[in-house]
Image (cartoon, rainbow, N blue to C red):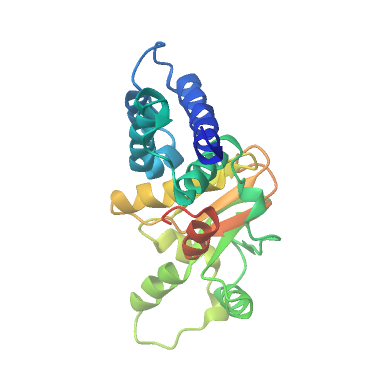
Length: 238
């Protein structure tokens, strides 16, 4: 068995052990069944499921089918590198703290819309978390501001006389952000955005606190616009 086969099998065994420990299924259940079970709750496995099933077939050929003591199918370098990458994503995931925007600019519910929009413009942000007396109150977005403006009369709009809370109260979907902890794998954030999209709703941002609760200090933010860069960093679709 040459180096490629050995490296491939080492990565496969590590993934197989991870899936077995995670799925809760009894010993002896086929590898693909572990994949289908874990993919329901693990976005990384959901993304890599077809790769994993293909690699399981290759593993069977390497281990069980030999011609004259020789391996019939030798993994190429792409397969060795790909399964090693999947192993690392599953077993040593990149956390949200390694990608999040920090510090996070926020706005107070009693700030004026003029203050909020000027801050968004100067920082090139499309959303700002809103707080009231250090308590999370919602998220102000360009979309919600646009809808609010469109609903106003033809009279001149004085943004310095309108409070942020008024725009949040008008928004039909007031809260379009979720909180996660600093220990959340970055790839799970991709899953949160994808899940909202499948439901026909929109997730503006993932907000990060130490334990993932809104009452804690806000440490970072990941926005929908970050997903292409995250996909590239995690090599999800290579």
